[in-house]
Length: 130
Image (cartoon, rainbow, N blue to C red):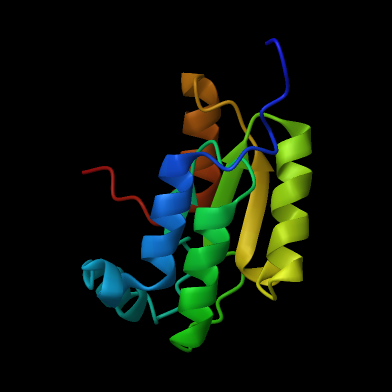
């Protein structure tokens, strides 16, 4: 790489974060339906963000979940292959009062084995292999 992009908030991430921060206004009330359906606190995360960068969408979703009364720890998994990005996600999540709701994991989402390990770690007990 010519320069480190770990601190960049990309336009797509910005727009996704805005939608997750206010799903009704954005026109995706299904986000709130998903949060409500997850109120059983079964342990599996409700969302995984791959290539999180600064973690804006994850933080926005966590804040929306908290506002809806859903406080499950590690409800969101935010991943990035950059240690600097992972540090930014942790800092941003705690500064926004949702640090306990976001599990930050260093992961190269371009490698199948990394994704397979992520699936097994977070969803191993919840996947029905029929």
